[in-house]
Each structure stands twice: as C-alpha cells, then as structure tokens.
Image 1 (cartoon, rainbow, N blue to C red):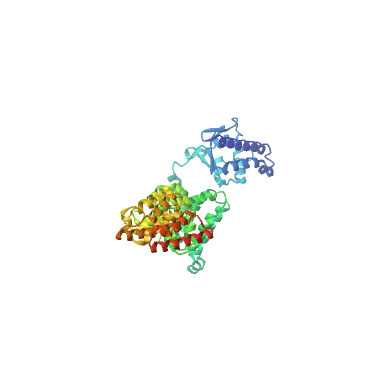
Image 2 (cartoon, helix red, strand yellow):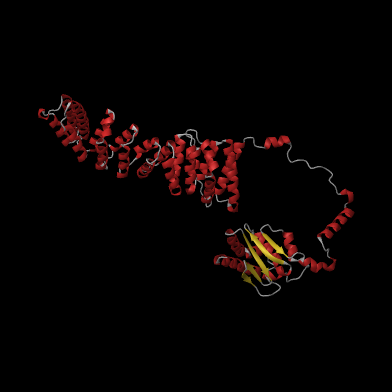
Length: 541
C-alpha cells in the first residue's frame, strides 16, 4: 500500500469520526445529520474515485486497511467500531458510486442510542434490512442468533427448511398454488414489430454509441467491457462486409478524444493487427478508393510492422500493396529486418511497393541498393532507377555493366549517365566497360548509349577517352572500318558533353590536315553546330 493511499484513507475515517461525534451530540437535530456527514462523504468519494472499492477490517477499537491500522478510538460502548464488532461485523467494504444516503444509514446503525427507547435489533440485522447498494459487510455467521436463541436455535439449515415447510402447509395448504399462467410480455407480432430488421444499422449505431461513451469520459470501470463489445460489433460488420460502416466507425475511433481515448485506441489497434483480421481487411478494402484500409492501417500500433510486411504479398493490387508498404515503413523501427529480407528475397510486386512507398530520398536509395542484391534480375531492374547518386550505387552499376543481360546493361548505363554527383567514379566504370573486348560485340544502340552517357558526365577522364578515340587514325581495310565506327561513337559522346573543350575538339577534327573520312567530318560538323547552339542558348557546361 502506498503512503498516499493510507493517508487518504486515514483522512476519510477521521472525517467520518468527527461527523459521527457531531451526530451523537445532536441526535435530536435529524435534519442536520446529512450536512454533518458532508465532509466525510466528500473524503470517501475522493478515495473511491481512485480505486473500485475500499475494504476495512473491524476490531473492537480500530480499523485496518490492508493490515495497517488507519483508525483507532477509545474502548467505549458508544464508539463506531465497538457496536459493529460486538454484533458480529468483521469488515466493511465501500464501493465506487457511494451515495450520501448510504453513509448516513451506516452512521445510524453504528451509533448507540444513549437515550434509551425501544430496544434495537443487532447491527447485522439492521444492515441486512437496509441492503445498502454501495456498502457491504462480512459478519460472523450466527453471531447474534446464538446469543438470542441459545440451545433452542435450529442446528442446521435442513431443520429450518423443514420447519418452514411444515408451517407453510398448515397455513396455506393446497391453496398455495399457481392459479394462472403468466402471459408473455410480447406476443410474436409485437416482437416482430419491435425487433429491428436493419441489423447493419443497429450494429453501426451500437458501435458509435460506445465511442460516444468513451469520448465523453463515461466509460469508468466498464472500459474493458466496452472494448470487448466494440470488437464483437466490428467482427460482425466484417463478416457481413459492411465496408463503409466499418470505415466510418474506425475513422471516428481515430479521432476519439477524452481521458480514456488513448487506451481505447490502443486496444482497438492491437486487435486490428491480428493477422487474420488484417487479411480480411485487405480483401474487403481491395476495391479502388475504398476508405476501409487507410482507416484500418492508421490505427495499427507501432509494433505492427512485422505483420504488415508478412501480409504485403497478399495485396491484390499495386495500390493496396502500396498502402501496406507505407504503413510498414512508418513502423520501420519494429520491422527493419523483415523489410531488408523482403528486399533481398522478395518478388517484383512487393519490392516495387516498398521502393515506391519510401518517399524519403535517402531511405529509397538505401532500399534500392539492398534490392539490387536480389538474385531476381527483374527486381534488380526495378531497383536501378531508385538508386541514389553515390559511390556504392556506382560500383554496383559498374559491376552490372558486365552482365550477360542486355536489358540490365542498358539500365545501368542510363542510370550512370545521370550520376553527376559522383562523375569521376561513374565515368571510370563506363570507360572500363567500353575498353573490354566484349564491348565490340554489343549492338550499335548500346554502344551509342555508353558513349553518350560518358559525355554527359563531363569528366576529364571521359573527355580524354572520347578525344583519343576520335583522334586515333584508322589503319588497314578492316581497321579503317572499325576505327571509323569508333570515331563516330566518340563524336556523339563529345556532342553530349556540350563544353568549350568538346567544341574545340570537334572543330579541330574538321581540319583537312586531320585526314578524317567524309562520314566522320560530316558527323563532327553536325555535332559542332549542336554545341554552338547550346552555347548560344546558355547551356554550356
């Protein structure tokens, strides 16, 4: 027991003692007794607001609360404890909702009538007759009866029952019998008329009523029961497929206010994260623009990430998978390992959903780099456009340039050409790929893409590589054809760079002294015009 609890109980009992003394002194002023008990009633109510009940153990001169003495009084017959203990009461329990009238009735029982008058019944009998709703007691069985009845008292319940039956037979005889059968409250027609026929509407109103009770702080100690009832109603809606009603109820739950709103929402969220219920929500919310799934996912607790990742493949459409992925990423702290495993081993639909749901650029690039290690080539291709411009991504794409898949190589080339944040690293990977003997076996379009991507990066190493290819004089019949092809590719790369040095290199190639073929000269002239136009337009690198 905390010090605060015991202090509050002591204060309540001390206040009750003071009130009883005033009532004892002014017994004749019965109309004032209620006001005398007002301080004690307020003190007890404060205690019972923080706990469902308060049980006190009675001794002849003291009261105990959880084995601690919280109230004592002198040993006198007029004491509060003395009469109750003498008559057999061993404990009193005050419950939440205690009324002023309850406390006043208890005071009348506990006080000894010093003025004499008609003899009173024992305290247990008086309490039993009062049947107080918020005050109960425990008494020693037969305590007063044994004193009053002595040896003539029946020795068992069976004896009492037998004697009662004998008396009933003598008094009532055969006349004590049912003379008519009770009629039902409603006949079938009335019941049919009164029973609601629109069950979905009834379920919806019941759920909204519970939310209103919680919102206005009327739940009290019934919060657990309200949560259970609320869930039964939601399950009924789900079984019938009442998607719109469920969405509305869940949205109201999300906006719930009041002292118990947070606890109520947490309980709802725990049930919503149940895998079977979440799977059902995915099926019900699969329709386009259905409001159910967003309202459902918004209430899930922070630790629901693993179940979201596990159910991600169940999404029947890209939109549903995107909602699940976004909800999982929002709870990243609870499911980072599951997301990594899905990116490394999952199929295209789930990886695509995670990549597109990661709206933060840094996280998206991190996801893409993990997905790039997926053995599925389709997943690699899906991840490439999301890679951020960094050295790790450049190294991965450089390795992909040696892939036997043309589609993978082209995707890597196109992405490396945009990595202007790490130009030298990206250019070195492109140069290494173009220097391999296998590069000559690639088709013309792929070779052109490589040269243009290298020129677009605008690096010194890339310019030197392209300029050297353009300036290299072709030799021999077959060498001339190959050399001319390389020169034409280099021209496209230099034109893509759009810089003063690329313009000078192209103009120099136009000189007759360079001895280039007419096709190379024509390509250089066209490329130089393109670069000059870019210079005039202010697009010079």
